[in-house]
Length: 87
Image 1 (cartoon, helix red, strand yellow):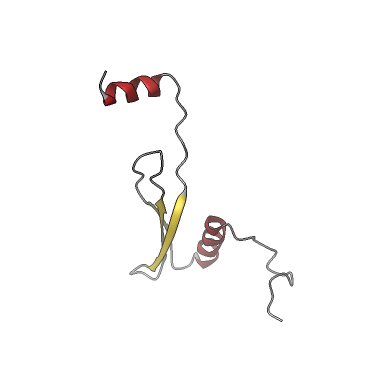
Image 2: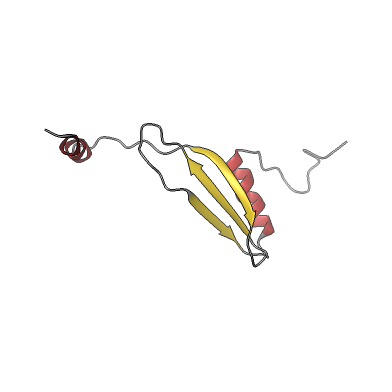
């Protein structure tokens, strides 16, 4: 049995595929003033994973910031609270 046959058997047998882990995130401004986040995924144990690209329009700054915070694992507090305010 060759390697591709072994992989095929494992996939049919319900072998659980591991979820890719984000290793890095890049940010760039788009030409139209919007926001682009590119997530680079780990290659460990699960083979190659294409980068995930998330785009936000120029008027979606709040959504872009929320996406960044969630992706980075930062706590999202209430905007009106004093939590995280500079002293």
